[in-house]
Image 1 (cartoon, protein in one colour):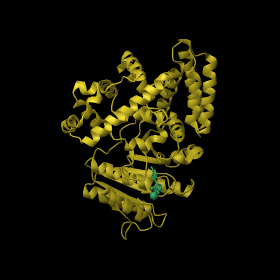
Image 2 (tube, rainbow, N blue to C red):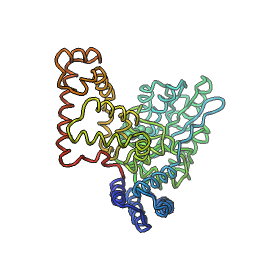
Image 3 (tube, helix red, strand yellow):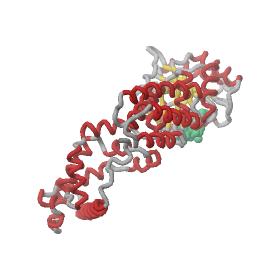
Image 4 (cartoon, rainbow, N blue to C red):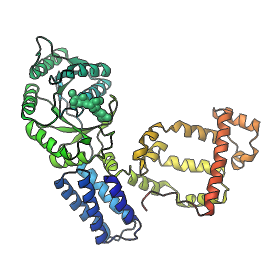
Length: 441
Ligand code: GDP
Ligand code: MG
């Protein structure tokens, strides 16, 4: 897959001292193949690799250190650029209801998105009406009603008088209803087909012309792969859209489709949908998507922050101490403080490479646990931190009370620390493990 291939080629660069133009060419070749494999459209691949090559040549000529890092940086920057940088704000009406129309193939995630947007807008204080202009599938109206109920927003369904059987009339009457009742945002859900067809495009155009949307959001399933460009251009030419929503980004797709669509249509990507639940979506962030495509998290940010804030000498001193088995809880506390300087623990874990598979564990990661550990160590006297051997029962009870924890938790911490110290000493005999392992040098 894309990220594995990129990682492999970066790994090769990482071991080199300086970067030659031949290295750049080889890596760019890898990147091209990786992008093509990830179903990124050819013209986008071409532009992308051209820009990367030029920038990386610059890095090679400057004889910069850390060539692997330089190239990762160039690739990352270029990805962010093609993906469109920061996503823009949504367009709202100056007066009267704002209309968002959703378009896309069947199963893309339009109806789900209607609920997500509805809930999100409602929570930001707006009143919302979901309009059921998908009359294609028997259950489509009902599905929108269920979604609307979960989102806590009103749903406009076809009834006698407002356009049974006529999606355009339903949209028109829904907008009129919103206007009369001072509803802020109207979200029009439309029908999709499994493939692009002219009848569907015509219907979407008719709905568009009936309600004059402020935004037409083209919803695209991230798993669609090589068809992304053809589908997106068909919708661009057939209906037109003002923005793209990538759905199903919780799946395996690395996001090559977002690169293609953005590169080919130039339309901004507005949202990223990441699950079936109504809260599973977020504003699109190009840098996050670039990180996802590279599967390296915000690794460059981590490197920069670490370089800035982490005291290298302190780290080396600590490593030596760990190797000799002399590490104390005082050291541990100072390490913890160093780590905190880098940001929250969750953020740190999220920035480490290869976290793609660990996303779920990351979600379960409990920062409060780390806070508890810190509280326990802080409740110890300096003498206790330097020698956990003196921690008898009454000291442990005092520490538990002082840190708002239990004696069991204090015992667990002491046990874990002793085990970790032993392990580090053991590893220290064969040389300390590289603590920065996995981060390009
Ligand atoms: P529509 O035909 O475009 O209206 O698509 P739906 O909203 O009905 O979604 C089709 C299926 O995809 C449903 O089973 C949704 O629950 C599911 N779905 C929609 N968005 C996402 C998403 O971001 N992630 C996942 N995993 N499933 C999604
Ligand atoms: Mg639908």
